[in-house]
Length: 464
Ligand SMILES: Cc1cc2nc3c(=O)[nH]c(=O)nc-3n(C[C@H](O)[C@H](O)[C@H](O)COP(=O)(O)O)c2cc1C
Image (cartoon, rainbow, N blue to C red; front, side, top):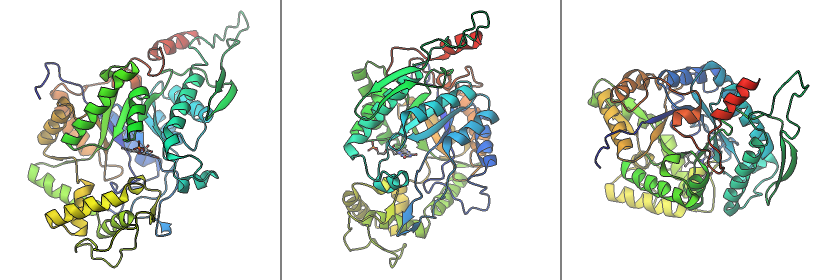
């Protein structure tokens, strides 16, 4: 694809992962996965690199493998919104984006907490609206599997619409705090009434309008319903497609859906998850990347992932040997709470078998192959060129980088690659705005007739 005259700006975000096997917690350089110091280090590194935002995923139940806590990945996490509140105070420009589930929470509570995060960060809040609904997680909320899979996006859409009604129940000028008239607040401030299939609530919302009006809405899901939800309601898609050809197909598909909702392709940023390995030379980086991938897919992890797909105990199999010749039991769940292995396991097993046979791969080699290894590997110049090419040829609008080391895993990228992206003119030399929506270059609020809340925030600022 030909490079356009004005190159696209690359949007960068950082994630402290912890949930999947990206994190190598057993590495001697790994620090705490829960101490605030680790989060602050990574967030400040991202801010030094002028990233758009810092991101946290969420798992609402400890995963279990064959009846025990799954501890090959990091287990145990702090609460996202609480951590991001602390990070908002430890940074000044970086966006702070929380994954918060729309199935097990209530709109009033989530809207209030996100509006509060937007207030205390000065307009830097983002919300990744996820729809995990499994009964295993639901047990933690005394609801079990109360929601059918087909209903999770209708609930999520109504959840988001309700949150927007709550945020819009306050206007920027609703707190005159005028001692002359004795009027602190507009009489109708915060009034709302939502009567829908999932939520039937009315009353007054407690939190005045926040700087962005609405926190930036992020979506992460890939089904047809998920893509439509992204096209109608999201401002950022967090995607798993980080191999160029499939990423381009996903990008085309999702951007192509926006017109149906009266939106333009530029109203949505698509940002796949990615990893990056930088060293002095391409050869050194390749060797290091191989080492990292083998730590991420240990012999035990390879067997556990195979068991998750096969639905059977395969501990007797040699990870360096061939795939089992016994058939999977796709109905039985040996790794609980892991969305990747939730559905389509018979088909996955068929694909894995075919791939292993075609290439002569052992169990561990197969899991490494499907795991995908590292996304960008090479010298700083090689990595900067590859990232730029990926974005300019419409594989993505940017990336959410997950690091294998907490908290120092982003240091090399920010020190050695970011300056090259800045030299190319595809990444900001400094922040030009103050809100997350400014960083993302987004002005309109999706799902409403309104523009971004910056103007109303300024009005509110001048009134108080
Ligand atoms: C890249 C990516 C990241 C996700 N992160 C989370 C997460 O942190 N927490 C969560 O509960 N679900 C997460 N999900 C799950 C989705 O929100 C959604 O529940 C799941 O993918 C099923 O939706 P789908 O059928 O539309 O893909 C993620 C999905 C993707 C693709």
